[in-house]
Length: 583
Image 1 (spheres, one colour):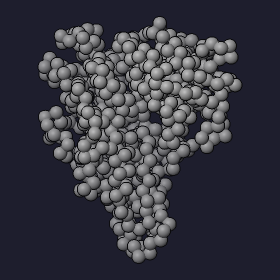
Image 2: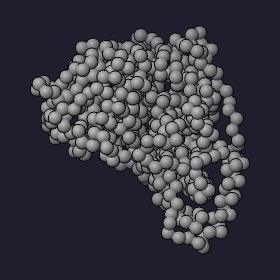
Image 3: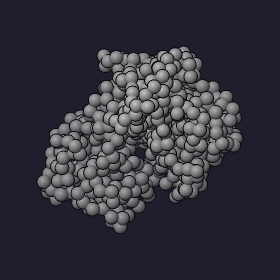
Image 4: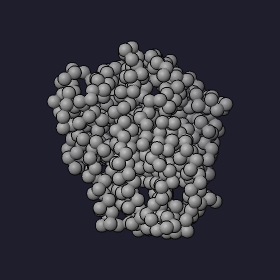
């Protein structure tokens, strides 16, 4: 494995001094002032693609925005939700095959994604210069290591400081927390999102690579930290929601020891809002019993700077509208709204919500800059092929009659679309990943059929998935419950502590679920031993809202995730990729 690169500064123009943007802003101001008297009712629709954690906030702000007319037309702002990594992937393909409208503005959680986009477009033979000027920050939130306060205090007392070096020391120690007199906490467990999708995962990957530079064995450092990952996820919300459920059962300290998240998400979790939904002036939720505290790594940290990137394919009118909306977002009242929701403003200043000694009031934490685009892409490649904790998992597919329905707005069946999406997602996994394949229902009346064993390489399972055939048989709730139960049992029988042991279930519904019948499965999943926990992620493809609520409870009982494919924000391909990102 190539040695990690050293951190180094990247030149950027001073904040609010991007010459190209200022020039266009001046031109926009002239045009806007001239056309006010000529407004008609044909509106310019400005599409803004936002990362997850600020999506609801931007929608709320857009609803209060009173734009001037542009080119004799009114302006309407449409905010769409797209995870930073997913949006980068789509923009690297010129937004091809997307359900959502092509954006005029992209606001990922961090400039890091824009750097990666330039490299991915270059590799694809496309124009890499797709962003207008140098995007400016809207608000900021540093990456922190979030820990339950008791765990933070224990580690800090013993080590005197906390950085990635201390995380490495705890990760490689086979005694885990017993090293510090806390054997009941078990092994050190790290929560980290998938860096190909999520900003906190990407920034954690970069930070650990930087911390490994200069160590006696950088490869061993990287491998040790990664080996303590509990599981991956497409979103921090998965970890925080699962931690919330564990906290309600007085099991918070057994689920995870530390999670790499943005500072803002610690604030949200501690006010009982693990999904970072918009709630003001106060969240109507109970705070957790075991609160998280943000640890600012002594090594320094990367900042989620939430850039506002106007895309070059916009025409003059949309560009002018985008610049005016940007000015609104930079205004003092809106910056105060960002601060009220746990962000820092674009100058990295805290508002009244981030108070007390747990938050870095001075902003003095050493800021790390991301590597250049080529090195960043290389880091991700090494993570995907070498570092990522390998999977030991089952993919369970519903092949019943409900999967013969056409996908929403599609000419192919749900199963045909899902097979292609799952096959592509499995191809993204590494040769060392082993994924078995089961289907249900069956022709012979048995609950499920084993199409490939748990020892099957992911690439082989990818080919097998494409050959799965529909059955003219209705799925039923008993088959579903028993198949999920059996799949988890099967993984327990061959549990590998050095891998991520998980189940992904794809179901098209067609049967009714109820709380009473599901209670046995939920109790079984909740009662798993922590050192042999198998997490279940469920993809509901056209399932009813009532069934979705139960499917979500089943997934969360195992500390897994639920994905609702009826949500129009993503295609089935994106949802399957998100589900597979849990391992």
